[in-house]
Image (tube, rainbow, N blue to C red):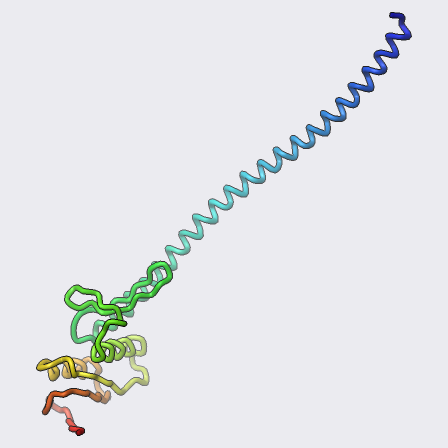
Length: 184
């Protein structure tokens, strides 16, 4: 092979190598893009994990704050109930309201007419202390012989200047300082 042929062959190889170099440089750009996207993805995953943790903490704080308010309201309701304890719970966004009597939770939907009247009266007093609520409605049909004691406790818990209307099948319920009207 003479020198001229060798030069031509080298020129051909040079063109081939330049094409390969351009191809490799293009691939290197793709590789750099992939590396950059991978880094961005890792950062986004880290940010997402942080956001999930913060969101979970905020939900817990919100639930604790709401539960604290529910406990305060329940405690206030208890002051007006003749027995048991009020229960207001928030669990995963669902509100459960009821009355715990003899260590048994009774949801509001299962309370008797008299229990509902007493519970809602207590609830109203708890959320509106000193408010406009000055009239108590009490249904004592299911209270039997304890009607007078229950009515007395409700009147005492309601404070002064409140009027109480009690419905009962018991004849002659009278407490000290009470005005009793019999309707037939």
